[in-house]
Image (cartoon, rainbow, N blue to C red; front, side):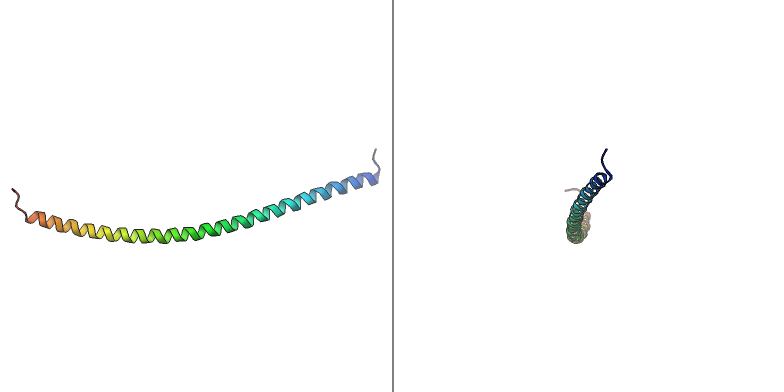
Length: 86
């Protein structure tokens, strides 16, 4: 049977190794968290760019829709003036 000193030494070694593992894992997690923070910031900036571009596309599409509606109205007026039988 191990002596009190041997048991205490083994326990200290076990605790020290586990604390080192915990510190290592904590450092890795902090690195991952920092990396993810940067990725999220970049995605947020890209999303803002996409939203701006989408707003521009929507505006342009609305302008084209207005022009098409005007052309449709004009064509309807022209067709109404043409004789029914060619």
